[in-house]
Image (cartoon, rainbow, N blue to C red; front, side):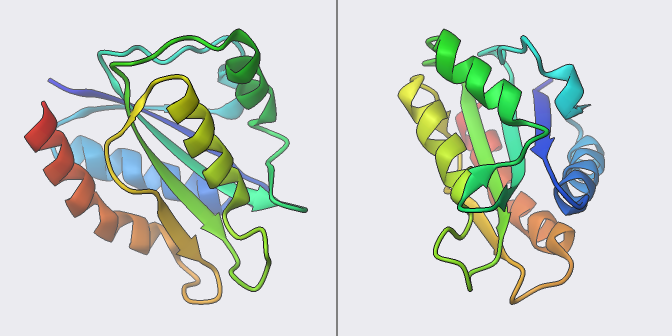
Length: 152
């Protein structure tokens, strides 16, 4: 059984709701999904035997949201080597800004620097195109599921 950890960073709740929706859908696919709240991530280092999905929105000038930034900084500072970790990134943003999905791009770059392997291409959900990012993320699960089944 594949274990999937979902973490999220949000300002207004869209990324949280999207992560909650994904957790339910992943469980329905027969995987063990653990949704971790930002305040539960202080010293969390993802297990390489499990999958990681990061769902995050972007603030200001492309920054990681305040709620998940401490975890981002912890990973950056401790720099654990995670060559067997498979991860996916779901970014929520607004393409009318130059920093569209900046936080998702930063997480993608950081996890790659730590040696982790992207399981799927980064999903960037544009608020100018959809008001319900959880629906786009649910559609993306077909791609994620196929990648997991082919890599496990």
